Image 1: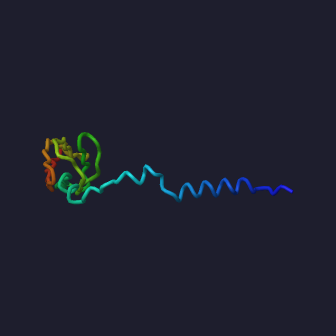
Image 2: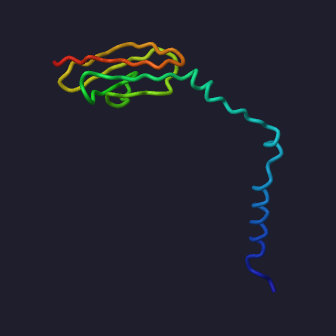
Length: 112
């Protein structure tokens, strides 16, 4: 008499044993974690504040949020910073961010 489900059960157990035993190639590869200090030294942050609450902040023409806003994880480089709000003249600036810096920018918006 043939038992139903016996062969699928053996196949399932064989599958589980493959999962529990590491692949030989995986044992050879070692992955080193990057230290948090190295990341912190490379990334920067900026805080954007304005004289007007909830002014829109754009970095390289991409909306980031509203003031007061802190952006973290920025890479060293030059960025276009734009702050705007309805009823006010938009302010456009080019900012330079160095590796590991924490900068604060205060933008004064003038009414139209």
